[in-house]
Image (cartoon, rainbow, N blue to C red; front, side, top):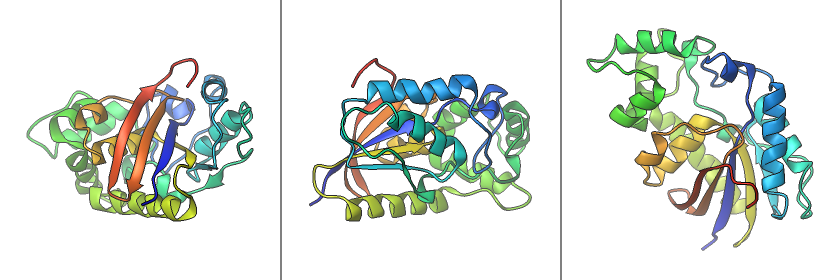
Length: 223
């Protein structure tokens, strides 16, 4: 059985993060602080040799991975391979909208209003939170939970086939994606917390549906 260690890093701050807008499959450039998020994450991980380096195919993740890998001193790849499977959740027609405005619209579809996205996940669960976006999207573009998990499983399958037992893998991804992954591996209490830009989550992956969360939302100086 192949077992690999995934270092999941959330991309650096973007202008949509700064202005509290839903981002999803849409993209916005990194802020100056976001560029520093990438470098800081790279310095924390500088002594880890990555046998593979990946990012989602969204610009904010690609650029964060580039800055991160520029700090590596352990012979890791210098450029990430892009994996669309690890994109952020697709919020459909809610993308680009102020998060509180979007929440007001979503609350019209539930008997239990939520104060913010983390409150929704804590009370409703990750799966039903994603399904609420899909239900409320009049253009039917937003992903439901089954669609989201199917592509994440496809990404896990690729990494497990591509790498050998014991490999250490970098994947620069997105906040909700990482929260959904730790939830998938049995930690809804972790998923209820927002991921910091540049923070590291480590998964010991043994199958497309089996993994252990060894580290969550970590921003320590050195790993």
